[in-house]
Image 1 (cartoon, rainbow, N blue to C red):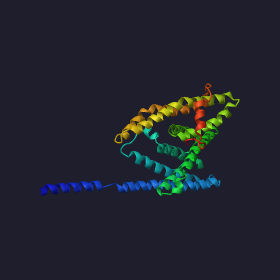
Image 2: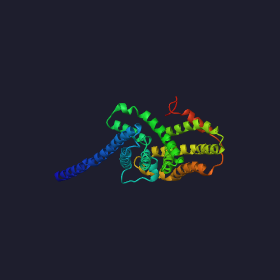
Image 3: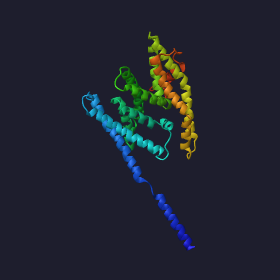
Image 4: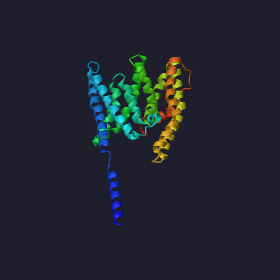
Length: 316
């Protein structure tokens, strides 16, 4: 009996030793890289903002250097976050990544890295880094600014798209390539972000009356066709996102990763068709002309008027 007990005790001690082993060094290294990425984003982003505000961003070589170092920090921390969430062994599908906000921000950062520098392109990443660092160092006054920062980011995204659109029409640099990539990613953000849709509908209401009053029938035709496209895809996109959320909520914890992967793999057709047709619809109308649509849908306008951020009863 004594030999059996000693064998059992030895086996349990070995088992306990194995359970105590944790990859602390790897987690610590990842944490330091993540922290360094956000610090680079914030410090060099603010340095570039100072040069931009003082009108020195075009007269010194430091401005583009600060701009790209800040984006390198963005690429580092967002890549590490994605690898930590999904794990290095189980690589998710491309469509699963597109459904995550971190991956979409990473794609936008890659586009901005190879395009012209601007304060408004860095603004969302700077604000997000402030929030993450505030949470890491437990700075509660900064965390209270999160709702304000979110609204600034949403409005800034739409403003950047309008600026790139204007630069494309004026044939400035590689703004056309940046516009196509940014519209694709922004369309995905509209699928998953109710606040972004509210802001877009708000501007649609303001622009609808202005565009309809124009005497240029060609411009009115393009606008009507765009509004009609939003109307036809609004219900389908909302149903798609709702179904995706239900799938993620009802999946078992053990098989959650497989369930999410299969759900997004089955939604390839929706993501591809929704994004590409959204871009080609507007682009085709500008280049070759489109038939006149049915006007601004009442449902879109009613949703916008009832969900404008800042109004009473709005969700944003």
